[in-house]
Image 1 (cartoon, rainbow, N blue to C red):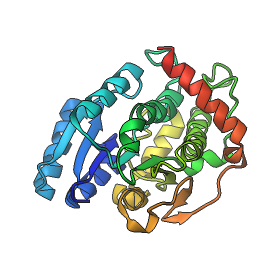
Image 2: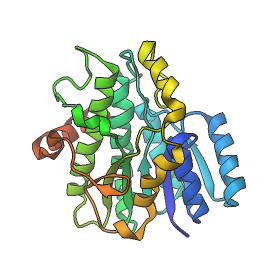
Image 3: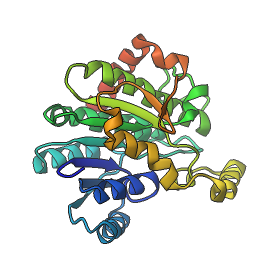
Amino acid sequence: MNEKICLVTGANSGIGKVTAKDLAAGGATVIMACRNRDKGEAARGEIVRETRNENVDLMIADFSDLSQIRRLAAEVKAKYPRLHVLVNNAGSHYSKRTVTVDGYEATFAVNHLGYFLLTVELLDLLKSTAFARVVNVSSEAHRSARINLDNLNLENGYSGWKAYGKSKLANVLFTYELARRLKGTGVTANCMHPGVVGTNLFNHVGGLAGKIVRLFTPFMRTPEKGADTVIWLASSPEVEGITGKYFVDRKEQTTNPQSYDTAVAARLWEISERMCNSI
């Protein structure tokens, strides 16, 4: 990864931090996109100390705020001439329906619109970089989900788990559509499931479900294990040129039948554009 420039979102903890550390250890220049400056600085300091790589940059953005995502993209484009790897990892889960500053349901906004807007804003930079890669962290939670394009804000019948599953299905639909739109550019786009990892992703889960999740957290996968396929997709020569796929433990897997509906994917893209551009 020497001389490669990589952007990892949600990089101050969990899978994102492990990914950022591994890429830095491989010699890459790593841009850590984090929501909290203090936590981001602490993680950056740890990564620099352990990898002895000073080329670790910290940029701040709250992915529930589209204006901050635009600002992040502008900062990246102003500072870096190329971008070899974009890892969309920042995500969240809300047990109760929450609305962002932009007026959107928070799980969908952070987990899908965050990926979508940052990637679209950086597309020209990615296209200008030879063999650039986009890696989207999705989840097996997408398998039981179904997206209703007329109710993306989940104003009716909200459930935290349902919202999370739909946002992860949106990740897969977005990845496949992105790969189709990038055909011939040399830029690849893939998504993956990290496993059930013991991170702070579900800190917003309340009630009995939240207690159960936190009870079993010590028995879940480590962030290191969860990040393995992310790192592999971001850096391995084995997957060079492979695009529009979904991976679990480095193996390609089929996905939810709705994820292959190109009409749904194209419409989701158009709606996402409108949602982002209207702010």
